Amino acid sequence: MIMLSLKTASLWPLPARLACAALAGTLVAALLHATWLAGLVAAVQVAQGEEGRLRAGYLAAQARASQLPQWRAQRRQAGAELAQLERQLPDPQAMALLLTDINAAGQSRGLQVSLFKPGAARPQTPYVALPIAIQLRGGYHAMGALLADLARLARIVTVHELALTLGKDRLLTLDAVLHAYRLPAAGELAAQAALPPKTGAPAWRPLAAVAPQPYAAAALADPFGALLEASAPAQHGGVAGPDPRRVREPLESVALPAISMVGSVQQSGRLSALLLAGQRVYRVAVGQYLGPDHGRVTQISEQALQYNELLPDAGGGWRERHGSLSLQKPGDARASVPEATP
Image (cartoon, rainbow, N blue to C red; front, top):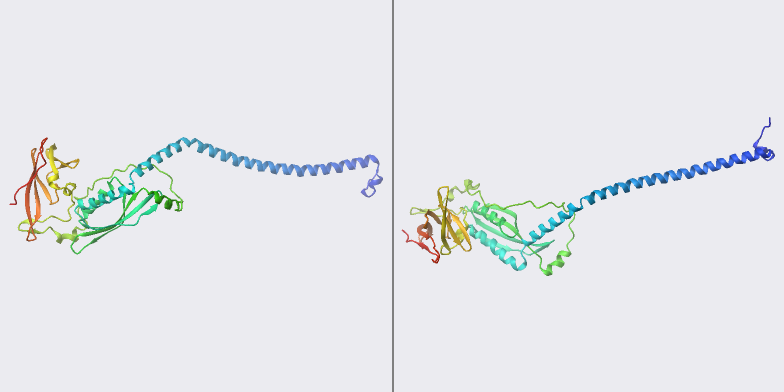
């Protein structure tokens, strides 16, 4: 048996040397192949991870693409709602009319307007806000009715910084800041463009249908009533004066000569008069008021409406004046006939 030593490898027989060289080459090739294969495995693993990420992104994009028709419909709806809201914003020329409407709303409810001061315009995206400081004096329910009237305006008006205080004259004082909104003028567009963009805007949701309701709490107890027990209407000579806390009705802002009776309607056995004021017809029942002098409807027939007014007298008291509105027939002139004071 021949013993081979690496120290005498050069003296080995040729077949042994060839076999040893082949074995060494095989080991080197196996090592190189293992290193190269490990790199391929790592590359495959990276590619598989990238494939998973791309597949997840594709599926997410596919899911979003399936919602594209719905998003387009929402965009059209949002555009229509935006256009509807913009139609409620007056232009600078129509803002004066809106301010007049707000002032008239307070006066029509019998409130004393102590302050009505528009402030400087505040450009905001995409509109311009106009703050209006107001101070009103009157009854609690009259103020509630005014706020309901503001909600029913054709234009958008919001109420801020509202405060109620009880005066020494036992009337409430309302201090608030109204915000009226209008479209920007040409010179204000640049100021709006310089405003920083809003971040974190909430997701769009369809506008809920909101129908402004008339003030329906006038029959409830006045929360300040316990403080106003001493403010009962003054009475002189047997005639009680008007209650300053009573909610004024729409026809109390219209002069009686401008009101005409055009018909009547009966419902549930109760007869109501149809009164024309301007371009609008009002339905009035016994107990309601009309005219600026606290005219209270006392009787209604198919041919006429009777009312009692309260007028101040020279002695600081009150006196009554009776009057009537006759049914206006085609071609007749409007007529409000006050009778002599008894």
